[in-house]
Image 1 (spheres, rainbow over the protein chains, first blue to last red):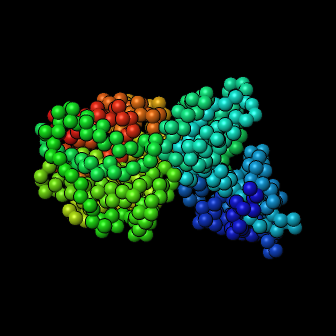
Image 2 (tube, rainbow over the protein chains, first blue to last red):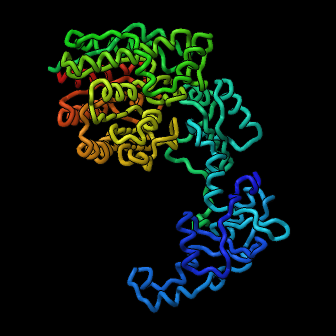
Image 3 (cartoon, one colour):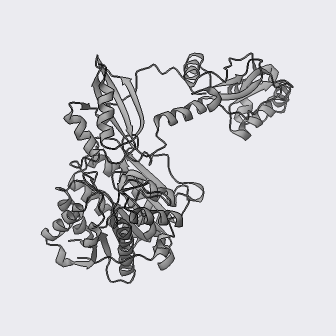
Length: 228
Length: 316
């Protein structure tokens, strides 16, 4: 669960003396939204995003009303004029959890990953975190989600896992989330099977309430992360 | 009344999925009883199964996969690929009988002996990938049928409608890049049901972009949403694609009494879907429809659902 396992290692970078148009072209050619700015020793000095570029463009140019004079002014702009110097970075030994919480707090779309001497070793974007989360949920594999309401007390999960294991069903993932009722938890089991009829009956017979799928939700965290 | 074929063979019951498995041989007897007790048997052309020629199965499935399937059945294993896929010594041969029966049925339609047909086969097929068994499925019956229609009978555009409550991942993936086969599926939303594919944004790839359409349905929904989605998604798609032949992946597991899903279709809802498919087939495919059984696990409900289904094919 370390950043080093999930980050992109072949980082597409740009020089601080490059023009704004060059930066824009590099982003669109590679379908990315963040370009770390590095010096000749590959040490990070800044980051430029597609939003920085859009903010620097006058509206008339964005609209396509070609205006030679405006264009010339923009053409003179360099990456160093619009980049964020000393951006927030993370270390390759940060965990994915660190990165998730940092991205939520800092409201950025990507972190350059640098080692202890400031050398750029990778980049981790919201996209990479999402890929890691898809993997954690197990939803790349065929399966069925079964939501179970449990009392918040020790040993509940064991009973559920035992009941499902007895049916010879493998788990893709298990998530435990807060439920809106006090002292209860919602357990979401992603079961790698098409055949959930028997196990659902069994769980009900054991006294568990199966969650109405239309009332499922993972948590009530405020929607703080804005994708960039 | 139309000339309708009914592929029914006791040998389809030889495929034993093991104890407590929902995809059980009794499903076919329930279907047969429903058709018989509904007085429809005498109007139907009964078709019995024959072994498929391996070459047709190889149009869809990898040779290595087919060999692996044969070996694992004959060696006495009880499951294949996933724990879900219960097998026995007879499974391999039964899967060949399922494909063979469907291909014979196609011949009968193309030769004008019958107009349409219901193929009550086991094992089902729509989850089977080219190289992997999944969700009780081993050979993708409908996919092989589509290729056979094209290669043996020169049909250019095949339309597939899949109303099993689970998404037919295998069929979709096989034809994803193929603009000559349109795959439409309506099913329980993949975030809540097996196999986790068939999202709205999956609409084909490369040249096949726009020739796959998925209508995911949220848990608890039923007839109204199905009607709305089929009118919005299927009908315009087929109006544009103009299929020359329609294959139907028929699953009865979206029924409100079927515990395999959280979808609440009524028996009348199923009839409406099939009637709509028949209208589309009349309009574009000269009524050429072959319906192939996929899922449907509520034994007490299967007789009535099968009777209604066949009644619509017969146009009684």
